[in-house]
Amino acid sequence: MSPTDKVVWFTENEYSKILDGLVIVCVDTVVYDSEGRVLLGLRNKQPIKGWWIFGGRMRANESFTEAAKRGLMRELSIRTTQEPKIVGYYDLRWDTREEAPSSNGCHVLLVAMKYKLDSSISINQIDSSHEEIRWFSQEELRSENLNDYLNSVLKDANLF
Image (cartoon, rainbow, N blue to C red; front, side):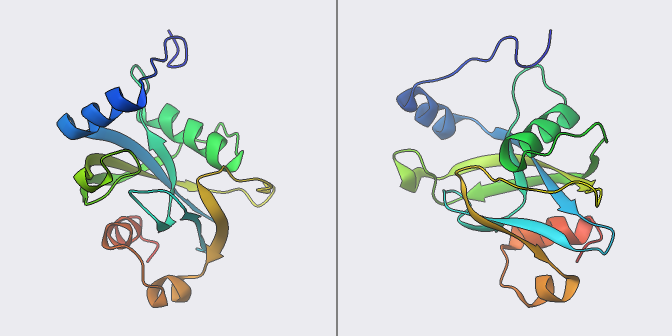
């Protein structure tokens, strides 16, 4: 059975209760190129407003790799057969979230992956959760005021 064969959706109220009581697993991917530049998206939704990597919640019966590839396709329209590599696991606790009550925040287990973008692939669209995407050089990453969690992921990916 593929992960998309049996996708269960929740009402907004049900999902808010889930966020209040459970840790959510997310798989987010650092996209980088042969020059060591990192692609970040400027998110416009909580819990991560600001520059971040690409991905989202993991679905039932989905592997980390499947979740990473689905996230790259959904957020950047990148379809790949290349296997993203695991960078690490992170315990993220956010003070706010998009869903009501937003002040309850949420707790996320992040599985961070990394994916080297082939220079022949162009990114020509992004999803609605991002205002923009931008390539950052190593120097720009160090001078940018990035989220502490993102700094940790980039360091562990040897891209910072």
